[in-house]
Length: 579
Image 1: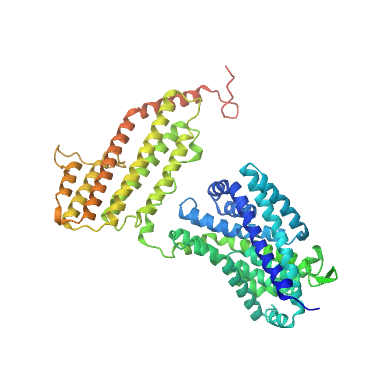
Image 2: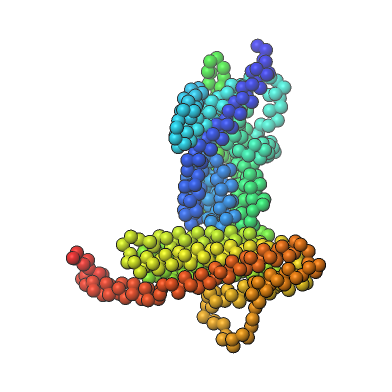
C-alpha cells in the first residue's frame, strides 16, 4: 500500500500537533482567566514554609496545567518581593509534580471523544453571555482538543512504521545504551526548549510511542529530556528581572539538571521496575493491540505518564531536604554589597496574630509606618550616590510600594464595626498617615530618579545638593530617632533657602547650565515642594488624634476586664455570665 506523505502523515501530524498545543493554550487561558489572581494571592500567602510551598506549587500547577506559567509566576512574585527565595524554590519543586497530573490525563484513551466534546464546548463558548461561563467553556474545549490532537498525531505517525528510511533513522534514537539514552534526553530537551512546553513534547512522544514509531523505552527517555528542557522558559523570563528572580530560575534549572543526572545512571533499573509495575496498569507496554486492523501500543502513553510523575515526585523527595543548601548557594550568585540592605518589601512588625489585640496592633502599625518612612529616606542617599544605598531606585520603590499596600491592608483590618468611635478615629488617622507616607515616598523616588538620570555641572550640582540637604532637614521632623534625638541647635543656626530661592537660582544659571539641566532641577524642586507639603501633613496627622491616650484607655479596659473575671479551679479564666 502506497503512502501519501502529505495526506497520510503531514496533514494529521501537523494538524494534530497544532490542535494539541491550541488545546493546551485554551485550557491554560480559560483556567487562568478564572482563577489566576486568586492563585497568585493564595501562592503569596501559602508559600510561607518549604513544605507549604511544595503543596501550593503542586496544587496550583495541577489546576492551571502549566509548569511554565507557574514558574514564570513564581519568578515574577520573587521579583516583586512577595515571595522569598527559599519558599520559591520549594514552589518550583511542587510545580514539577503538578504538571505531571496533566501528563497522566493526556495518557487517557479519550481521543475519539475529543472532537465532539470540543464542538459542544465551542458552541457554549460562542453563545454564553457571562464571561465566567465563556472561560469555563474555553478551558473544557481546550481539554477536549488535547485528546483529539493527540489522536490525530497518533494516526498520522502510524504510517511511518512502513517507511524503511524513517525507521532506520529512528533506530539511532533507541535508548538501548547510556550513550543513546543521553542523546535522546538532549534531543527532547532541545525540542522542549524551542516550543516552551514539556507537556507538548510529552504529547508528541506519547503519539510516537502509541503509533509504534518509538519503542516504549525510548519514549520514556524522551519524557526525561522534556523535564530538562522546560527550564529554559523560566530562565528567559528572569533575564531582565531582579537577582533574586534570576536565582529562582537558576533553582529550577539546577533542580531539574540534578534530577536528570541522578536518574540517568538508574534509568535501566527504573525501566525494569516500571515494566513490573505496568502489570497493574494494563500489562506490558511493548505488546501491540490490534485496532481496526492496525497495530497500536495504547499502554505506551500510560507508561510515559507514570514515569514522568514518579520521576518528579522522586526528584522532589530527594532534593527537598536540601532546600536550605540551594538557598545558601544561590544567594551567593552575583551577590553585591547592595544586597545587604534591608529588604523593605516584607513587613517586619505586622504580626497577624496581633490583629485581634488593638492595643498591640496599633504600635506595630506605627513601627511599620516609621520603617516605611526610613525606606523612603533612603532615596536621598540614592540621589547622593551613597555606595551603601540601593543601586536601583525603581526596584527600591517597588519594595516600598509593596510594604505600603501591606500596611494599608493590615490597618484596614482593624476597622471593626463594634469599635468605639475614638478607636475608629485612631485607625482612620493611621490609614491617612500611611497614605501620606506612601505619597511622600513616591515624591522622594521622583527626586532620586531625576538626579540619577541627569549629569550636572558644578553650579547646577550645588543647587541640587542644597535641595537634597533642605529636604533631608525637613524629614528629620517626622523621622524616627530610634532613641537618639537630634541635638538642640540655636534658632537660625542652620538656614536652608526656600524653594522659591532655589528656583530663582536655577533660572539665573543662564549659559552656565543647559536647558536639560535646568528643566531637571525645576522638576526636582517641584518634587521637593510636594515632599515638604506631605511632611507637614504627616506631622499634622500624628497630632490630630491623641494616640497615646486612646491606647492607654484600651489597655486599662483590657486589664480591668481580665481582672474582673474569676479564675476557674484549674487556674484559667472562667466564663462570665451574660448580662
